[in-house]
Amino acid sequence: MLIGLFGFAALSAVILNKAMSLVVVLVALPARLAAVSISEVGAHWHVAVNLLAGSLLGAWAGATWAVRMRSVTLYKVLAALMVLMAVALMVTHSASLGTLALPLWAQVPCGVVAGFGIGVVAAIMGVAGGELLIPTIVLLFAVDIKTAGSLSLLVSLPTMLVAFARYSRDGSFAVLGANLRFTLVMITGSIAGAVLGGLLLGVFPDVVLIPVLAAVLLVSAVKLARHD
Image (cartoon, rainbow, N blue to C red; front, side, top):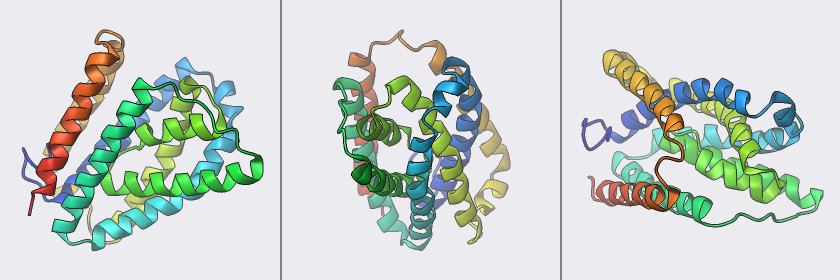
């Protein structure tokens, strides 16, 4: 929408999306902790640390690559990542996730590698990365999906802040100041949408909602791939 409807360049759209995503995560985190107790989340602190060991590096690397990419390349990369997110969305909500039951010596490096990849994707797309973090936490660490959702927010927040720090070094934040009113309106809408989405949870069955969301991502990916 930021690119196709509002006419922002790829990198500017990523920065704006990152700002909105960060605010939504900040709003969602306390609400999520009300549903899943701090003690439940704290019992799995090592999972967050394991993923952060990779995601923080990945966020820095992803933001660096995004800043240095040619605009036409970034459009195509975003298109490919949208396809990845659509697939993750379908798999996460249509299949029953098992666990890999890896020994600790394999689980830790796999967590770092997965975290790095998720950090890269989150930084380049300007998203929190929950659609990738949640299945990763369930598969690698055998955490129930409800707790995994809260842990994903704890990983997302510092990961997004690192990406912000990297983007700020190249003056990429200028787009926020130049479009301050637009940014504030979009952030307000994002918060309202997050609250409304929570209230409507379960109203629309996944069998209808998830394919629609995946289709939107795929259509957007095709349009971005054709962007020059």
